[in-house]
Image (spheres, rainbow, N blue to C red):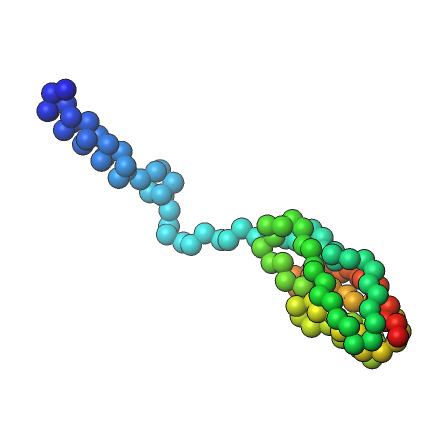
Length: 121
């Protein structure tokens, strides 16, 4: 190829890669709003759990869609005398009885799910 043609083609490539899109030229340089994907549902890795006094098990909260922006949940025991649960889902059986382990979506308090826990001797 001829040297002038190569230089000409390189110049075109540089100009094309440096040019701005029409949308960029009209932009007022405001940051774009992040896209928020809401959790559609939450559930537990188990629906029913049985533990002996002193045992523990970690439940897993499953949030869908898996690419939801905020997958954080709030953990709660309905009967803290029977079982306690930490914010990582670790359930500890304290006394014989029944309790519900409840998760609630951090973003939408109407999205809850319950695991039925029975603690035996």
